[in-house]
Image (cartoon, rainbow, N blue to C red; front, side, top):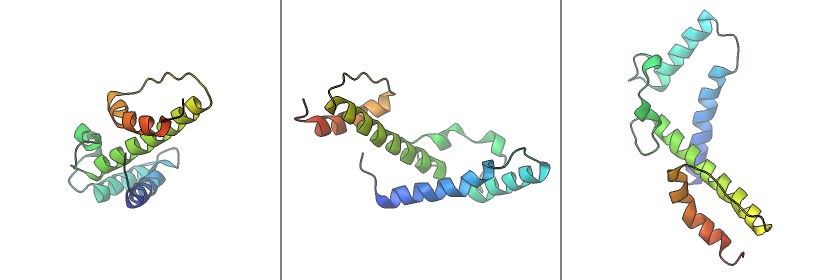
Length: 119
């Protein structure tokens, strides 16, 4: 899992910079224009925000800042799931978790380490 404080700070900063775009509803023409300007500022290579490449959200790639956001989001979710699963097992619970393959690969070692001697 790893991850650094710097990475978490970067994730929070990216999230904060983009979150404000979605707070106000309904979206007026001026809000749409502001959104389009923000998209251009965040991703100058992107000519039309409606055609954002799916690869930009793949945590295994490094084509755009969104790849890093995806990686950090996955890392956060992995840590949270490991914490919840570990707590449940340590309280004597029987745990069955259904997660995506990439989470299993990452979480296996962390769970083994956290639960060594817990049973």
